[in-house]
Length: 272
Image (cartoon, rainbow, N blue to C red):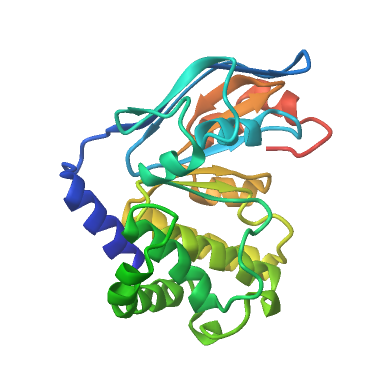
């Protein structure tokens, strides 16, 4: 199953109308403090269906904290996150995942002792069974179909030759692709990527950009945190800039490139 088929099947199931810029994710007035330090303040953000929305900013800007709020790892002090008509605030990470939100972490979270195929089959089985406590009797009946789907998703991210390789033997770039496959096989409505090219060599970064472009062309909604501006400007439809836990700018890539506040926030770190 290709990336495009994953997205198309999911949209047909939910009855999306093509061409309608639906608001999939709404972050409303989110605040979060840690020991008096304001990690997030007055954060308002909308993500539209099918877009790639990048969140950028200096180190310590609150980017990962915001993703953690979205997936239920951190509860905000104030404000709410609404996804696809469901209020996520107060829900567990598992409940949020079941609503259709998948996350790819900055440090790959894969099962190192399992093969690539087994890694992708685990979330596929869990998602199809409706929860993460696997029913072994249902799993036996579904195993053949899930194996075939996992193999197709693995091929779509360029890991077919590593199908039976143990995950610990993969390069960092291939581990990132493996985790992406583990997210895609869940048929997410929203994919959150936390620095998907962090620590990669340039050739791995370029390969990941091409893979994410395919996902973008297929219409999957994505939120990306990324420090590499080449990656951001290659992929993003819209960009939100955080600094000191606050949004200082939002707009298209061209608008962000020419925004003096953004240039000032990045001064000494990375020029936009």
